[in-house]
Length: 165
Image 1: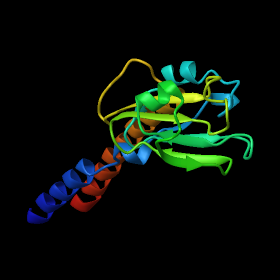
Image 2: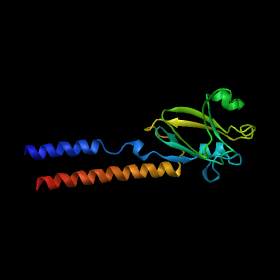
Image 3: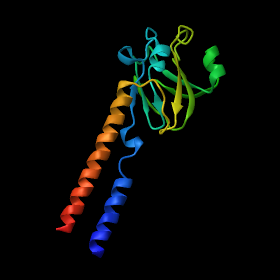
Image 4: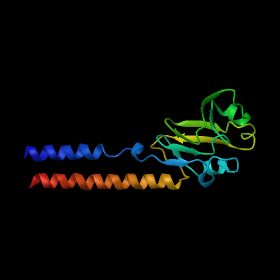
């Protein structure tokens, strides 16, 4: 009987420690099909997304023509002021992990591109907070998380029953 109780406890721990949100974090391709480009409507794209802690921004652009500059704050974002930057990337593919809730601000470092609208304001929500807009990748991540949890429960129950035999 002690063996069965031990297995039940082990199964409960296994289920409780199942997949986390970070395991199914969404990857957001900045600008959608247009990518990180001056022709993309980045404000509209961003408003259609839900960004959460653990998600990743994927910037895809033409090196030499564009870059990604992370700005220090909203004032720099509104004024296209690149005198106070946090990070600069220029390799053609840049990834940024959203590691805490709050706002982050990005622009292109090419002269004039920020003024033409090539800038992005991202509001990152805590991993467990809900919001109304949902992107396809975020919906997929939620569905995958639900499936993984269901799978973990089924597997745990299977091991428990096998152990009882």
